Length: 390
Ligand SMILES: *Cc1c(COP(=O)(O)O)cnc(C)c1O
Image: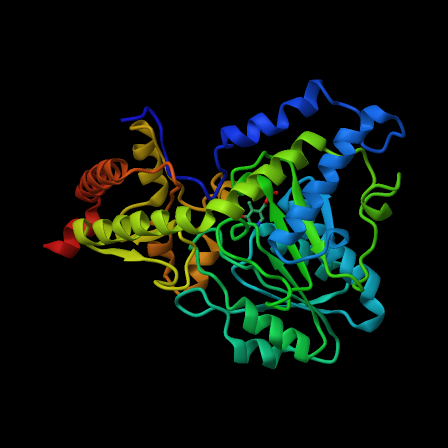
């Protein structure tokens, strides 16, 4: 058994060796600024051009519709603030959901302070956006719909094609936070009527600190960083060449291996879910049983706290999560788990495993056995549980 059993791939992924090797020359051998005019800049310049072309093709976009950023949070902030800032003459209403990542939610909260109106859509018990509710929320003043492709906590994949069609029909621009989906499920921005899309390299086997924003040509968004002419003058600053090369390599790997990898991961994930629900009483699966990220298993357990489970699992070298990584300092129950209708007590009992192609069946068996005994031990100490079962 490896020292660390890593089941927190929704927080970040291990960088593939192939990705690391591809990045290496751009730190020391060919470190030229791709914007320079000399021949030494040719290789980094060509690497960026190829990355943009292949990454665009991966989501069926055009190269000039891809802007490289410092990561998912930046892309989301830019998409939403940049778009509404340039289009407030057309309206001031934004539609999003209650289960978005805080990159979206806190951006929307900030915009509310600046005078924009935001509707936060409810979700059903599986975490899916109701399409009728979305249609009903659209008004004359609606300029933007931002709904995540797949949820980072409970793994639900939203009906993106249907949302895109509704947005198109009502002439409203549609942005999706696809940070959990990119490299994990097939994305075709034209098929799905997606106008803007955010992705991040470190969630799909690439390096941290690099992401992308796709903006369909013809859609106006304001510049994020003023300065040089990089990224069509909209995001100035010397390009993160090794990072973009790493993102490119991770994308190429996803392009060739995604289907087989995800098939294998999904099978193991289904086994993990079945084992947990079989071995542990008063355990509930969160998120959709069908429309779900292949690597995600998310549960609520009665009479135990998710935080305690994470701590006890950690002592055994098992990495899991009781909420989003960026939220685990907070003691509030997850806004996502509350939004799917779990009561507050149960929401405190949340636990997420997000596996990868490196996860083995032996690891799953070990984790489920350990989790089962930890839950039993903790429940024995819970007076409420003792009263309930007696
Ligand atoms: C990780 C994540 C983000 C933030 O991406 P960073 O690259 O870490 O800034 C935003 N949205 C979702 C759904 C995520 O999972």
